[in-house]
Length: 58
Image (cartoon, rainbow, N blue to C red):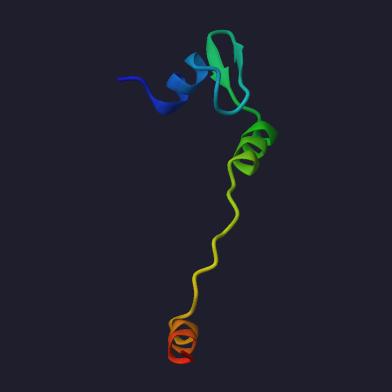
C-alpha cells in the first residue's frame, strides 16, 4: 500500500521534496510552509449562554 506522502508526490501535491541517491528528503522549512498553507481560519462557536440569551430576548 502506498503511503500518503508517496501518493501526494505522484499527484504533485503536498510539501516540496527532493531525491538524493534514491532517497526522498523533505526540508523542515518546506514541511512548515505546506502546513501553514493548509491552515483554515478557526470558526467561533457560540457559547451556550449567549444562545439562550439571544433566544430568550424574543
